[in-house]
Length: 366
Image 1 (cartoon, rainbow, N blue to C red):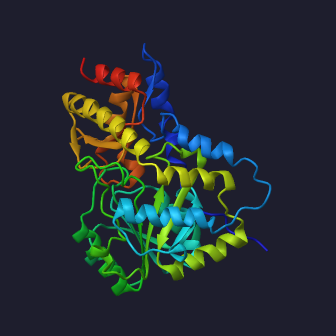
Image 2: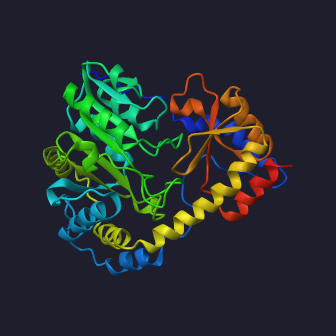
């Protein structure tokens, strides 16, 4: 029996090779601001929790330990203003990207179904749809979402543009998704990195958004950014208990289980606000230095109210801007990676060491 291979796009970062080569020719070397991978140390409190849990001889629980479930529930109430969750409403995941990519498959989507994503979006939403043969509709306007929509992704703060959705905007999205009978999932991985407030950005699970009804609504979260745990693959999903139950059942069969030491590290990370505040201050400082330098270089920064990126444009094709940055020894990502059309923005990450960021500022303001 023959089968058709998955029709997936080329991995976008492969197309940056020529520009990274050019940036490396700069006399000071390349400064990579194209990928949002943390560069700062994992907090000691988390590393100690991981080390103390290395006697992990038994299989871990797919649902997470009761202590981890309690930590996630408590964190949602304390930091996201989402009360009333229980263990049945939360589930740890191996990072957030794998669940984003697998969500259409786990929910049983296929040909003829629509997955809605933001107009400018993280590429993995579309990859998940491609895996099952569903159609992607890129739209920020709920009125434009078609009747055969089965899954809606909203992302706040957004990747790549740092756009933050208000409670009213989230509520309108939930109302429309429910009219369509669709699951709606909020990707909220940058919520603790709000540049307009010391409080996190609104959650899709906020009672003001859902009216106290969790049905058909999920929120995905990752500790990669707020706690520098990208290498731990530490994340979780929360919301509608019936959907969480479906996800748990499938993940048990597939063996998608966060390692036991990582689960213990997550408990420590969720319970400690000090390191999160400190990391937020580091990124706030880097942003305050980089943003005026980007503007001085002739770029306008749009949105970027939260998250780890500046969404910048000079009004030209984004690849022209990538080339201009590469001439200064700086690598950035073009808007084409994020479905922008016409692509005129570049995404500039704040995830560089202070020395590298200051060097980038100097190169941009010469």
